[in-house]
Image (cartoon, rainbow, N blue to C red; front, side):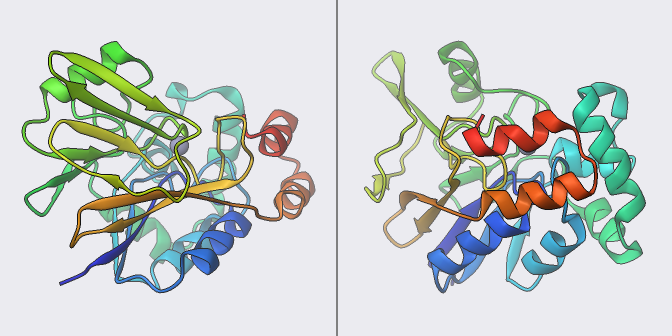
Length: 245
Ligand code: ZN
């Protein structure tokens, strides 16, 4: 029975960020990845290969789907599309097959937790970015906690009496949150944080106590940017990593 889980999301082909997370997190029984392993970043094959070394549960994100023609590139911004086209040409046959196999739906993780890339109402494309969306997601949830990604923004929403509350970024670092029914938790993004903090975001999950600890770790942002420059990726995607935007 796994106990200590490394929870990550939105790696986005940023191997330097992923390695920093893996090094700091230490030994874990399993890795749970909420999707978007590829897209935006310069090392899709390397990130897939690295993640597959672990006992891994991984969902499909919208970028993962688009990278293997399971989603239309027209649904993405121009910059995202540029890198997805490049990614399509880079992926090895084995990694394409792996991306093809990822589930694009919510996944039950034991009796207490549901995992989803985006939201229960729209598992791959929905955005939980405000109280209204959170309330709709909680209405669809039942007596579980839901771990989600996609927004690249660490956040915790929970129902309190008849209202929905938010515990926003910065989440209390290294403080363990007790997970309970009617709670939505986003660990943030490993490879492209958007909460004005450029450090890679992830969380550690203890299944024995059902507690989650949000974490941040510095990584070599300029090394990733350098690779992106060499590949002539769009400037906006390169610059945003420095600012965590
Ligand atoms: Zn993403």
